[in-house]
Length: 337
View 1: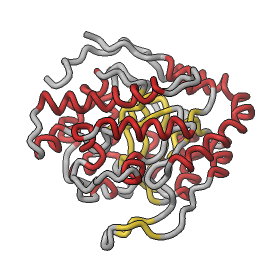
View 2 (view 1 turned 180 degrees about the horizontal axis):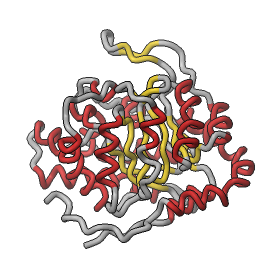
View 3 (view 1 turned 90 degrees about the vertical axis):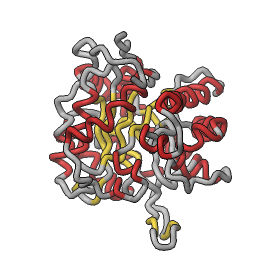
């Protein structure tokens, strides 16, 4: 049966900036969980779901308003390598949305909290770092075939929005954008970038432009990049697409693959959020190595600046509403079939 569109998230996005959470993996690691498995944080969907709920709650308590699910590295193929069958894999994927909902319901205060179902790139499932390179050697049709089953399962779980995130390659973005058309759930598209290009080397302006006319995409931007690259990308995304911008960079530290450790000093600062909001950002948060303390500082900054940004709410609302449910959502097959 058709999936009913949830318009509330679009309205909230038009009304004021929303605060995203931080890195799921670093919060789980800080709690003592081993994430060396190829499924990364998605392993805990099966092995310790309460740990996932606790991680979401830590970010809600810090001031986050949107939880990104632990499904980034989850796929039917990845679960199959651990001996998990198709039906159980579909259940685990869907459970990522419910675990985030459980954390949201547990938070007091009466504030509305939202759930974004994470859809990581094909390279994340390979667990070999290719999510930061793109150029997998697959056709758009092959990428569509890979992403379609889990997108349908996640959409059927009724998140508020799909987070098409850490996308390194414009070719993969094309596949994802093809799939979200008529799916019945809004989405944001967020690239992983280096300078003014995608990780695969395409000009970022051209990559952003792919989403400009896709009504289901409510926001476009970047994540899992340096704060400096995020600073430059926000205005570009807004200018190219005319849509609200989503931005959630890493801490600024660098991953040393040889020594399997983070090096350098963090450059993620809550003071950056003023520039992001001024340039068109409406969804702001953190990615790898940004924990609850960083989100708490960012949330406080957003609260201070909401009054300034709200002056532009009417204009943003017109933009967002153009992106929401112009057509009736297409019928989809039942999750997992």
